[in-house]
Amino acid sequence: MSLESQDASFDPKEILEKMRQDYWEQLGRPPAVEEGESLPALTFLVEGQVYAVRVEAVREVIKVPPWITRVPRSPRHVMGIFNLRGQIVPVLDIRQDPRGRPVETGQIVVLKNPGQDVGLYVDKVQGLPEIRMADVQKPQALTGPLTDDMILGQLEILDEETGKRKIAVLIDPAAFLRSDAFSFSELR
Image (cartoon, rainbow, N blue to C red; front, side, top):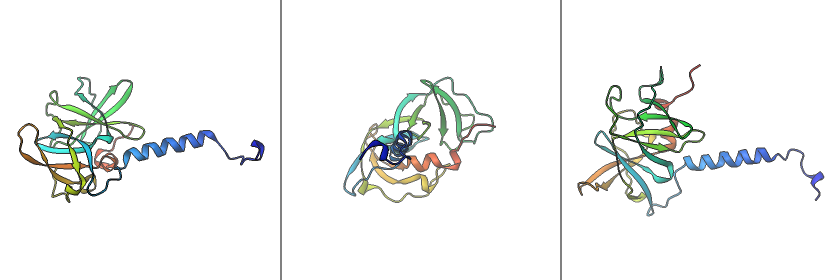
């Protein structure tokens, strides 16, 4: 078959764009995990509640920068934006009452998000435990801006500081980042 006889609709740019979209979609999906398998997770505290997110969804963890800029007319749980090595990153806050509370001592977990990473304000990163998917249970009633579709479930984990077992809420980063409660867009 000669190159001239190939389909005229062959466009390498379209193929590369499709590959790029597939890559970002794969990052937003939880990995295919068998019931007995385990996966690494990052655990962190927000107002005493332990949360977990799978490690594949985390780009990095940083100290809260002093230059977070508030965005006018942003939703209540959008803390602001900051520049992370040339990329503008919005910071979301899942605390009960995020407005007017000090944040200098916390950290930001930067989650991978297709097209634009998103920072999540946390009080403290705790550890990197292995989570057995068989241990994940249906979530109980939650308070705050998180809804049931943002949660994969909950499970007991060992608190590395106290040695006691605590309930951790496993966040679904893809659903979490698509939620209207945390939506942000350019101001027109």
